[in-house]
Length: 433
Length: 165
Image (cartoon, rainbow over all chains, first blue to last red; front, side, top):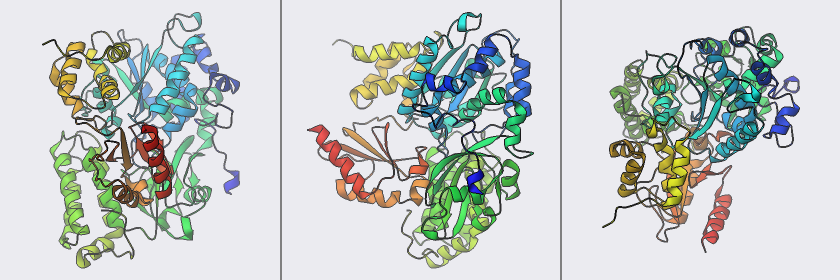
């Protein structure tokens, strides 16, 4: 029953309020209560880390690494500067969720960042937003100013010995900045080229100091988890996927939108919230977690649940929660070409397999689209994708390989047909290049 | 010949921004500093990059390599308004390619080109994180226009053209 699904319980919990972004609104729903308790010494760092572990919050940026575990990697008692970085470089195609936390609930993010920074012993935290997010940046600056004036952020928070400086930053356009070590390079004022790991950021991060990088949605979840308890948060979701997740549904649905839902919600219910497939067409395919994740045939998705294990069961992943829906008029050759072009343009150029491979893939697909494809090109596409996967410094290699492999696995006929006939199997196809 | 100087108002913004970072890390300010310069002058010339390097007291190469990496910097003059059309999957599924062709025909330019009157530069841009409101246009790298169709494009271009007069 779609009506029974409770929405906006965590990161979007202020959205029903008038001016949800203001300090006044946020305090009305109990905002900064947890931070004040932390500052007063009533909530200890060990308890915070244990609570986040127990809540089963997993990194909401796409990789899904357990947030509590990550928080524990930095030794807070080790002397020296440490940093917290909030990754607000929302850039994964299909993903439009952090944008609304930044613009409509910035105080909850500030509270989450303050708690996380204090827990790891960091006195400085950066919130790095993508270059186009000028409106969101301004909203965050306004909120930060309010928090500073209220004595919640800055030197001697609320008269205590605790100091936390938060700085809002904005980039200049590069998908790869979303990779955590590339973000650190960019913060240092360099080209955003991912670093070799190890060393991991917890040992050698920003300016070589211990650093934790978390996604916006992950950090904004922390105050609510601590307020209502790890058990409460966990029980919103399934046994293996605690809490809620924000899904941004785009593509061929009647009412595209952004929904914060309990993990484990069925795809069918999510689709209902979006008014179904537009023009009453069939659901041909879905990419459930941003364009880097594997495509899933529509029929399979209609029986799947939106959780970490549910998406694993259909051989894909929940990723960033960017749900891209394609109806039965979609030409999969055109769709894949569009996705591959993105990765070609956004490859940072550091690793040869990615830099060259993304170009080869795109050129081959353009050849197929222009009628010059050969049937053996279909296997060659998979071969090139297989040779990029696992041979790059960062996960960008997988991000381009997975769509290629999965599109051809599920829709091979369409690719072969295009190569044989020099035109799409889907009549009337005109989108795409 | 006296040495080229960046405008005082720009230098002030740069110095203010640099305070976000440790004193010994002036390089961290490069990314936003280039945007301050671009906002003021419209694009980034070599002498501005050199002047920034000098101001931050870092080697010029550290400014040049950033300016050539990130997509929002213009190393050539652009029109008064840049029109970025999202070319990524969600916008493509919702007709962004048709919209691109419509704007190309209307303005008589291809992506990367500027109209003869110097008003508009057309650009193909990658996912703008506004996928649920596709197709999306971005003006001057910061103003989002969502759920666009030929009619709303006409209205927008009209509004921007008038704003110029």
